[in-house]
Length: 285
Image (cartoon, rainbow, N blue to C red; front, side):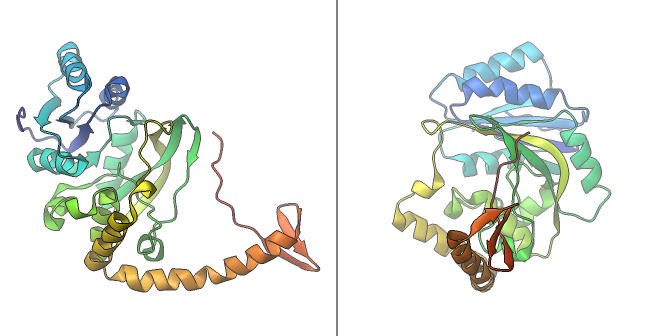
Protein backbone atom coordinates (compact mmCIF):
# COMPACT_ATOMS: atom_id res chain seq x y z
CA UNK A 1 0.00 0.00 0.00
CA UNK A 2 1.43 3.37 -0.95
CA UNK A 3 0.87 6.97 -1.93
CA UNK A 4 -0.83 9.10 0.74
CA UNK A 5 -0.02 12.39 2.42
CA UNK A 6 -2.19 13.18 5.43
CA UNK A 7 -4.25 16.35 5.78
CA UNK A 8 -7.02 17.49 8.14
CA UNK A 9 -10.27 18.23 6.26
CA UNK A 10 -13.73 18.03 7.79
CA UNK A 11 -14.85 15.15 5.54
CA UNK A 12 -12.90 12.31 3.94
CA UNK A 13 -14.55 10.75 0.88
CA UNK A 14 -13.40 7.12 0.64
CA UNK A 15 -13.46 5.65 -2.87
CA UNK A 16 -12.17 2.11 -3.51
CA UNK A 17 -11.38 1.53 -7.18
CA UNK A 18 -11.41 -1.84 -8.88
CA UNK A 19 -11.85 -2.12 -12.66
CA UNK A 20 -14.25 0.83 -12.86
CA UNK A 21 -12.27 2.95 -15.29
CA UNK A 22 -15.27 3.81 -17.48
CA UNK A 23 -17.19 5.26 -14.52
CA UNK A 24 -14.38 6.81 -12.50
CA UNK A 25 -14.29 10.30 -14.03
CA UNK A 26 -18.05 10.74 -13.62
CA UNK A 27 -17.78 9.75 -9.97
CA UNK A 28 -14.86 12.06 -9.18
CA UNK A 29 -16.37 14.98 -11.11
CA UNK A 30 -19.45 14.74 -8.89
CA UNK A 31 -17.24 15.15 -5.81
CA UNK A 32 -15.10 18.00 -7.12
CA UNK A 33 -18.21 20.03 -8.00
CA UNK A 34 -19.49 19.99 -4.39
CA UNK A 35 -20.68 23.23 -2.82
CA UNK A 36 -18.92 22.04 0.35
CA UNK A 37 -15.17 22.38 -0.19
CA UNK A 38 -13.45 21.21 3.02
CA UNK A 39 -12.96 17.57 2.01
CA UNK A 40 -10.41 15.14 0.68
CA UNK A 41 -10.98 12.23 -1.72
CA UNK A 42 -8.93 9.15 -0.97
CA UNK A 43 -9.02 6.86 -4.00
CA UNK A 44 -7.51 3.48 -3.27
CA UNK A 45 -6.87 1.21 -6.24
CA UNK A 46 -7.43 -2.40 -5.21
CA UNK A 47 -5.14 -3.99 -7.77
CA UNK A 48 -7.24 -3.16 -10.82
CA UNK A 49 -6.52 -5.18 -13.95
CA UNK A 50 -8.01 -2.64 -16.36
CA UNK A 51 -6.84 0.94 -16.95
CA UNK A 52 -8.46 2.35 -13.77
CA UNK A 53 -5.19 3.34 -12.11
CA UNK A 54 -3.91 5.13 -15.22
CA UNK A 55 -7.21 6.98 -15.60
CA UNK A 56 -7.02 7.97 -11.94
CA UNK A 57 -3.45 9.26 -12.25
CA UNK A 58 -4.24 11.19 -15.43
CA UNK A 59 -7.30 12.70 -13.76
CA UNK A 60 -5.30 13.89 -10.75
CA UNK A 61 -2.63 15.38 -13.02
CA UNK A 62 -5.23 17.18 -15.13
CA UNK A 63 -7.23 18.58 -12.21
CA UNK A 64 -4.16 19.47 -10.11
CA UNK A 65 -6.36 19.44 -7.01
CA UNK A 66 -4.50 18.67 -3.79
CA UNK A 67 -7.67 17.26 -2.24
CA UNK A 68 -7.46 14.12 -4.39
CA UNK A 69 -5.18 11.45 -2.90
CA UNK A 70 -4.21 8.16 -4.54
CA UNK A 71 -3.37 4.96 -2.69
CA UNK A 72 -2.64 1.55 -4.16
CA UNK A 73 -2.73 -1.97 -2.76
CA UNK A 74 -2.59 -5.52 -4.04
CA UNK A 75 -6.06 -6.90 -4.71
CA UNK A 76 -7.61 -7.71 -1.33
CA UNK A 77 -11.26 -6.71 -1.72
CA UNK A 78 -13.42 -3.73 -0.84
CA UNK A 79 -13.32 -4.32 2.92
CA UNK A 80 -9.55 -4.09 3.00
CA UNK A 81 -9.57 -1.09 0.66
CA UNK A 82 -12.06 0.88 2.74
CA UNK A 83 -10.33 0.07 6.02
CA UNK A 84 -6.88 0.96 4.70
CA UNK A 85 -8.09 4.28 3.29
CA UNK A 86 -10.02 5.26 6.41
CA UNK A 87 -7.04 4.33 8.58
CA UNK A 88 -5.04 7.20 7.07
CA UNK A 89 -7.94 9.59 6.48
CA UNK A 90 -7.68 12.98 8.14
CA UNK A 91 -11.37 13.88 8.14
CA UNK A 92 -13.50 14.04 11.26
CA UNK A 93 -16.31 12.49 9.21
CA UNK A 94 -16.20 9.68 6.67
CA UNK A 95 -18.26 9.41 3.50
CA UNK A 96 -17.78 6.15 1.52
CA UNK A 97 -18.49 6.46 -2.20
CA UNK A 98 -18.06 3.60 -4.64
CA UNK A 99 -16.25 4.55 -7.84
CA UNK A 100 -19.20 3.77 -10.12
CA UNK A 101 -21.71 5.91 -8.20
CA UNK A 102 -22.02 9.69 -7.88
CA UNK A 103 -23.50 12.42 -5.68
CA UNK A 104 -25.47 15.65 -6.17
CA UNK A 105 -23.52 18.93 -5.90
CA UNK A 106 -25.02 19.80 -2.48
CA UNK A 107 -24.63 16.32 -0.98
CA UNK A 108 -21.67 16.86 1.35
CA UNK A 109 -22.85 20.31 2.44
CA UNK A 110 -26.31 19.11 3.44
CA UNK A 111 -25.06 15.96 5.16
CA UNK A 112 -22.29 17.78 7.06
CA UNK A 113 -24.59 20.59 8.21
CA UNK A 114 -27.15 18.05 9.39
CA UNK A 115 -24.79 15.75 11.30
CA UNK A 116 -23.08 18.67 13.07
CA UNK A 117 -26.36 20.24 14.22
CA UNK A 118 -28.37 17.13 15.16
CA UNK A 119 -27.91 14.17 17.47
CA UNK A 120 -27.36 11.49 14.83
CA UNK A 121 -24.32 9.29 14.27
CA UNK A 122 -25.32 8.32 10.71
CA UNK A 123 -26.92 10.62 8.15
CA UNK A 124 -28.16 8.82 5.04
CA UNK A 125 -28.98 10.67 1.81
CA UNK A 126 -32.00 9.38 -0.08
CA UNK A 127 -31.11 7.86 -3.42
CA UNK A 128 -31.88 7.75 -7.11
CA UNK A 129 -31.23 4.78 -9.38
CA UNK A 130 -29.54 5.46 -12.71
CA UNK A 131 -27.93 3.50 -15.52
CA UNK A 132 -29.70 0.35 -16.70
CA UNK A 133 -32.62 1.16 -14.43
CA UNK A 134 -33.90 4.58 -13.39
CA UNK A 135 -36.13 5.73 -10.57
CA UNK A 136 -36.28 6.61 -6.91
CA UNK A 137 -34.42 4.19 -4.64
CA UNK A 138 -36.74 3.60 -1.74
CA UNK A 139 -35.30 1.65 1.18
CA UNK A 140 -36.96 0.28 4.33
CA UNK A 141 -37.42 2.66 7.26
CA UNK A 142 -34.50 2.72 9.68
CA UNK A 143 -35.97 0.93 12.69
CA UNK A 144 -34.53 -1.70 15.00
CA UNK A 145 -37.03 -4.22 13.68
CA UNK A 146 -35.96 -3.66 10.09
CA UNK A 147 -32.25 -3.40 10.79
CA UNK A 148 -32.17 -6.61 12.83
CA UNK A 149 -34.34 -8.56 10.39
CA UNK A 150 -32.16 -8.08 7.28
CA UNK A 151 -34.16 -5.09 6.00
CA UNK A 152 -31.24 -2.69 5.87
CA UNK A 153 -32.36 0.91 5.48
CA UNK A 154 -28.84 2.42 5.48
CA UNK A 155 -26.86 2.31 2.27
CA UNK A 156 -23.08 2.42 2.03
CA UNK A 157 -22.74 6.10 1.07
CA UNK A 158 -23.75 7.66 4.38
CA UNK A 159 -21.89 10.16 6.57
CA UNK A 160 -20.57 9.06 9.97
CA UNK A 161 -17.85 10.07 12.49
CA UNK A 162 -14.42 8.54 11.98
CA UNK A 163 -14.10 7.96 15.74
CA UNK A 164 -16.92 5.39 15.58
CA UNK A 165 -15.18 3.50 12.79
CA UNK A 166 -12.23 3.24 15.18
CA UNK A 167 -14.47 2.21 18.08
CA UNK A 168 -16.13 -0.62 16.13
CA UNK A 169 -12.94 -1.88 14.52
CA UNK A 170 -13.84 -0.91 10.96
CA UNK A 171 -15.49 -3.10 8.36
CA UNK A 172 -15.35 -6.84 9.06
CA UNK A 173 -13.74 -9.24 6.57
CA UNK A 174 -15.88 -12.06 7.96
CA UNK A 175 -19.00 -10.27 6.72
CA UNK A 176 -17.74 -9.42 3.23
CA UNK A 177 -20.57 -8.85 0.74
CA UNK A 178 -22.71 -7.55 3.61
CA UNK A 179 -19.91 -5.62 5.26
CA UNK A 180 -21.76 -2.30 5.24
CA UNK A 181 -24.88 -3.90 6.82
CA UNK A 182 -22.72 -5.45 9.53
CA UNK A 183 -20.93 -2.12 10.05
CA UNK A 184 -24.20 -0.22 10.53
CA UNK A 185 -25.45 -2.85 12.99
CA UNK A 186 -22.52 -1.91 15.24
CA UNK A 187 -24.08 1.56 15.53
CA UNK A 188 -27.53 0.12 16.30
CA UNK A 189 -26.04 -2.26 18.89
CA UNK A 190 -24.37 0.73 20.53
CA UNK A 191 -27.56 2.78 20.76
CA UNK A 192 -26.43 5.29 18.13
CA UNK A 193 -29.13 7.03 16.10
CA UNK A 194 -29.41 7.07 12.32
CA UNK A 195 -31.64 9.07 10.00
CA UNK A 196 -32.31 9.07 6.28
CA UNK A 197 -33.05 12.59 5.08
CA UNK A 198 -35.52 13.27 2.28
CA UNK A 199 -33.04 14.99 -0.01
CA UNK A 200 -32.18 12.64 -2.90
CA UNK A 201 -28.48 13.37 -3.09
CA UNK A 202 -27.01 9.95 -3.91
CA UNK A 203 -27.03 8.30 -7.34
CA UNK A 204 -26.76 4.51 -7.27
CA UNK A 205 -25.64 3.06 -10.59
CA UNK A 206 -27.58 0.08 -11.92
CA UNK A 207 -25.47 -2.15 -14.16
CA UNK A 208 -26.49 -4.91 -16.52
CA UNK A 209 -26.29 -8.46 -15.25
CA UNK A 210 -22.99 -9.13 -16.97
CA UNK A 211 -21.30 -6.39 -14.91
CA UNK A 212 -22.92 -6.83 -11.53
CA UNK A 213 -22.40 -9.68 -9.12
CA UNK A 214 -25.54 -10.77 -7.34
CA UNK A 215 -24.83 -11.36 -3.65
CA UNK A 216 -27.65 -13.90 -3.57
CA UNK A 217 -25.65 -16.09 -5.93
CA UNK A 218 -23.18 -17.01 -3.20
CA UNK A 219 -23.06 -20.75 -2.65
CA UNK A 220 -25.24 -22.04 0.17
CA UNK A 221 -22.38 -22.86 2.55
CA UNK A 222 -20.82 -19.41 2.24
CA UNK A 223 -24.24 -17.81 2.65
CA UNK A 224 -24.89 -19.80 5.84
CA UNK A 225 -21.48 -18.85 7.24
CA UNK A 226 -22.21 -15.18 6.55
CA UNK A 227 -25.56 -15.42 8.34
CA UNK A 228 -23.94 -17.22 11.27
CA UNK A 229 -21.28 -14.53 11.60
CA UNK A 230 -23.89 -11.79 11.59
CA UNK A 231 -26.06 -13.54 14.17
CA UNK A 232 -23.04 -14.19 16.39
CA UNK A 233 -21.90 -10.58 16.28
CA UNK A 234 -25.38 -9.12 16.62
CA UNK A 235 -27.55 -11.37 18.86
CA UNK A 236 -30.55 -9.05 18.49
CA UNK A 237 -30.93 -10.42 14.96
CA UNK A 238 -32.30 -13.66 16.42
CA UNK A 239 -34.96 -11.91 18.52
CA UNK A 240 -36.06 -9.33 15.97
CA UNK A 241 -36.10 -11.82 13.09
CA UNK A 242 -38.64 -13.90 15.02
CA UNK A 243 -40.77 -10.80 15.62
CA UNK A 244 -40.57 -9.89 11.94
CA UNK A 245 -41.75 -13.39 10.95
CA UNK A 246 -44.78 -13.06 13.25
CA UNK A 247 -45.63 -9.66 11.82
CA UNK A 248 -45.51 -11.09 8.28
CA UNK A 249 -48.31 -13.55 9.03
CA UNK A 250 -51.14 -11.00 8.42
CA UNK A 251 -49.53 -10.09 5.12
CA UNK A 252 -49.40 -13.75 4.11
CA UNK A 253 -53.09 -14.03 4.92
CA UNK A 254 -53.77 -10.91 2.84
CA UNK A 255 -51.97 -12.53 -0.08
CA UNK A 256 -54.46 -15.41 0.03
CA UNK A 257 -57.22 -12.87 -0.58
CA UNK A 258 -55.03 -11.21 -3.19
CA UNK A 259 -54.89 -14.39 -5.24
CA UNK A 260 -58.65 -14.83 -5.24
CA UNK A 261 -59.80 -11.20 -5.26
CA UNK A 262 -60.59 -8.65 -7.92
CA UNK A 263 -58.56 -5.47 -8.04
CA UNK A 264 -60.49 -2.22 -7.84
CA UNK A 265 -58.97 1.19 -7.10
CA UNK A 266 -55.83 -0.33 -5.62
CA UNK A 267 -57.72 -2.75 -3.34
CA UNK A 268 -58.74 -6.37 -3.61
CA UNK A 269 -62.39 -6.62 -2.66
CA UNK A 270 -63.56 -9.78 -0.90
CA UNK A 271 -67.30 -9.48 -0.25
CA UNK A 272 -67.47 -6.33 1.92
CA UNK A 273 -63.81 -6.28 2.98
CA UNK A 274 -61.11 -4.12 1.44
CA UNK A 275 -57.57 -5.31 2.07
CA UNK A 276 -54.75 -2.99 1.00
CA UNK A 277 -52.00 -4.79 -0.89
CA UNK A 278 -48.47 -3.68 -0.20
CA UNK A 279 -46.20 -3.80 -3.22
CA UNK A 280 -42.67 -2.51 -3.44
CA UNK A 281 -42.45 -0.37 -6.54
CA UNK A 282 -39.71 1.72 -8.04
CA UNK A 283 -41.13 5.20 -8.42
CA UNK A 284 -40.27 6.74 -11.75
CA UNK A 285 -38.41 10.03 -11.58
